[in-house]
Length: 330
Image 1 (cartoon, helix red, strand yellow):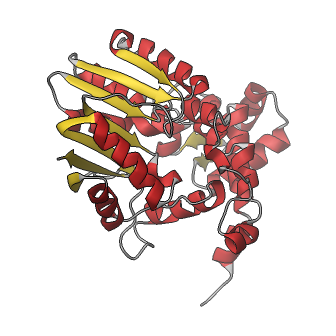
Image 2 (image 1 turned 180 degrees about the vertical axis):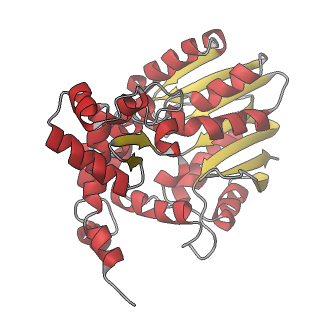
């Protein structure tokens, strides 16, 4: 039978977002992990009303993040790993970026965005210089980006490496390379307000003596030359293909002959509706940038070739939602 259930769920999807945010702000998932599993104990731990706590906890059960048996709440496996603040994989801070007021506003009038083909944020959208949204990105996205960072560190390999981490953000991609390879030296380029957060991560990982900040815009700063490897992680999707080619030409000039670029992106299939995470990412670019998009592998191959690269190959990433490309400089 055809029903409007899916449409009704989409119309109310904002409540799921806000319920998750509320649970994180209250520390509900952490409290349950600590053993406050009954309604009175949980409400007392949160400093909240029993009525409000019951309704929120029950809603999160319906959403699948909690389970309930008799009068006891427990965490679903994914909530236990990613929503307990005491877990090393805690992703709660990512909500401050993904649900940032700027991003919520950007999504507030999709019809207007579609009519013009450009973000309602105006100007450069979220890629305006020193946009504060990127500070929340740098603070919150490390746990989510750690698995691909570990994969990229494996791809970078051993031996002496000069690495340019372009638009480094939290810096975790270059940092993992340096942590795995004691002969790697990282130059991290980003706006100053973001770089100081990456510098904190470099100190935390014990590689600050092999990590050099390069403050400024990735669109204008001189990258330097002689790099063995350039990292382009979550960056090219902000721009149209012509702008991407201009960036890639500058990257090409910064590399040694035979040097590599490792790119992390959402790469949809040619049908542009699969796989779901990569295909859906185009909507984020529509609402937050003037011309950005999620590009197919063929489009990336074409852009890298136009910039002078000899080859571009996609490497397996297993269950990760993003794809990794490796390009070789002639």
